[in-house]
Image (tube, rainbow, N blue to C red):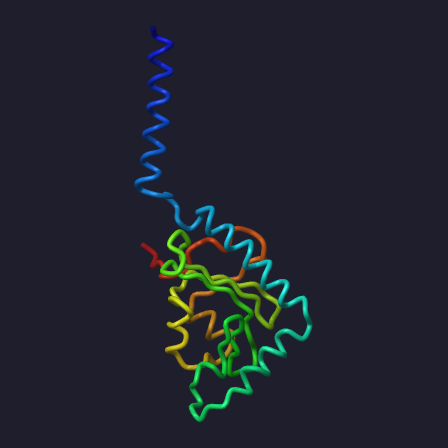
Length: 170
């Protein structure tokens, strides 16, 4: 009888844990499986794009060919895959917004013209609308500071950490 109660109790515990997980979701949305998968796919996509030596040059040429009288027209410096800074520096990027993918907390990944990988949890919103409302960023340093970008190795889960909003020391 004790053995049946122990088995029943164990099963009940697993059911309650499963129900709690289903009801409250992943207790750590920054390390959710869907976010990790998105990270892996995005890093691979950026690497494939940049493996073509002409890719960035071609993207920049497309941006510079935009006909617009407005010097702040984002179409002159922002494509779906590249951000061109006023200095000529650039970032090949992927971004996901939790409003687009409900199971994936905001994540921006990029490899810049300096050869470094960057990440941020800044909320650029759907289709990078927050960046489109800004002026063309000056340079890589000002972009990384303003949008809370951090360096990482381009592989590890380090990029899943929170960078924004900035945490103030307690």
